[in-house]
Length: 87
Length: 237
Image (cartoon, rainbow over all chains, first blue to last red; front, side, top):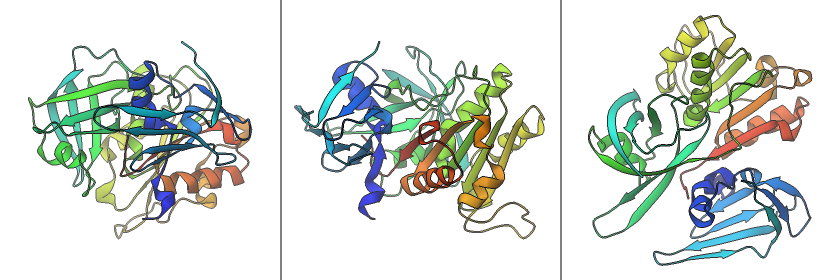
């Protein structure tokens, strides 16, 4: 297995984000903190390993990191300029 | 929420459909998925996403492929039986969906069990008598591995604008007249609508498959924004 085989997309974390945020974020407009590109979350690159790393499909900057244990979830959004949630 | 396995149906040697009775299920759109969570006696939890195979308005159904090193799929494919209870969450997804009221032609491209959410779209089209023409290009390893083969043949035989094109990448029957190679630009060129018709495109499969199909469509002149993709892998959220 190569690293590219681990690449999924934002659809794969739809259920997790629903649990964390309370709404379906697959169509949420996400702005990359690195290059400023806008993409729906479903179109972001997602790598799932011990944690989850979400990268911009344009500049590959890390936008979101998620690490979960049984007791808690750690969510790092420092690479995301903004998220636009719609009802 | 709780869902009870109402029926199981073997689709191929490695793939099974589970019909679920979920009284609290709010309904879904064609193309959406849900999460299944299994909890072991010691509290360990494993959770995976599975595409919904049934059309909106039909009984909830999942079609699951067994991944031999998987944590959840071997149970769903080999062991779950009528009456078993599952914990599910969903529906999930507003991106990889087709509601059937759009007039543009629809191109569906699937690798293996990537056909599952696209089957929900084909079933939805048939149920609602939607008029948008729809073509499915389905890549499978062998004829035995083609999921929903008889139903797809039936849908195509209805002559109402649904067509299915198969390619078998590993092994073909002696009298096989379909395609027998991996999806590439030339194969897509023979099947896909011209980009000028503004088709809606849905591609689902492994990451390698999705990347190959999307690259081929881009070479044919499709806009990246017009190609909706969903990748699945051995790992899930």
